Image (cartoon, protein in one colour):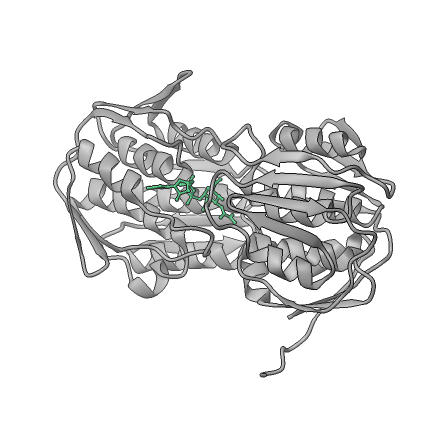
Length: 414
Ligand code: EPU
């Protein structure tokens, strides 16, 4: 477990790593070519290891040097191992590429963070529109057939489904139109990579138009992780202190920065740096999560921790996932006053949080508890450090740079 001794204002500078949710689809994009793919600024994360293990199981070879990985070889295996896909949802993205390259694919339904039902119906219906013959049998998706162009309408701008269709479309020499696509920065990073590999992608107001074919080698630097960035900005401000981030794309943080300012925090942006400071006494606000450029669901738990120490009441609507509230009960155990009302969280700000033993249920719930821990009086022990390892590179070291007292302990078996 990760242990935090809190209660002192933090202050310092942190360098932000490459984005987890951009590098995971980028690794899968290597399946679209037999030529080398070089990815730069790749963070050391459990989820990245899982995705690399997946493509290796499918026939690829991976070399790593620092934060650069080179992926070579041919993917000749059409069956994704259940043991890998059950660990992480982003591994399901191999379905379209395998089908496109090999004419068949067998991929178990994915696991991943328990934050809602998280079906894959949009992925499957989309591929079916492009000619795939899809059957789900005993928890495994079997897809076969030759893909062709077509128009796919997404009833919701799903990040994963958009990526699945971009990856598949990049191999199809006819036009694939994705109507109502997700436009998260991580999706746009995948678009840039596919274009570098040789696909044509037009991003229009309401749709993406993809025309693909035989893709070649590419070199691609992954964008900075806006969720990691937001987490450290909130780590500084939740203590009544400050954090400065280097190597970020501030335009990806607009929704968070606007909300921090609405609370009364001070925000400064200059080039690829952002700084935020919040003297104690920030105000409660209303927020709803939404697809980009709305407020990201991946920062909702961390913002909830921050608002639990605000002056007055906050209301947070979770509109993307139906049960992303694993942090709420644990924050209450630390002294927060929160009530859950359907998809909304009502937070009555309190004067202080108190350290205790809590459990992380997923990556971002874990991050919210770490933030509560750095602000709380006393020591907070957070079980489930493996969730944090999935999504945060060198978390203890980065928090220490901000002046936090954080260390890892073996959890005792109870
Ligand atoms: N949905 C469907 N059917 C589908 C796909 C999605 O109903 O076929 C629903 C989901 O159940 C959910 C909503 O659509 O209610 C949004 O899901 P989306 O597909 O957009 O999310 P995702 O691709 O599963 C990615 C990130 C998540 C992030 C969401 C939303 C990756 C690897 N994961 O998930 O990141 O929360 O987009 O922005 O890119 C995290 O990093 O902690 C994390 C959970």
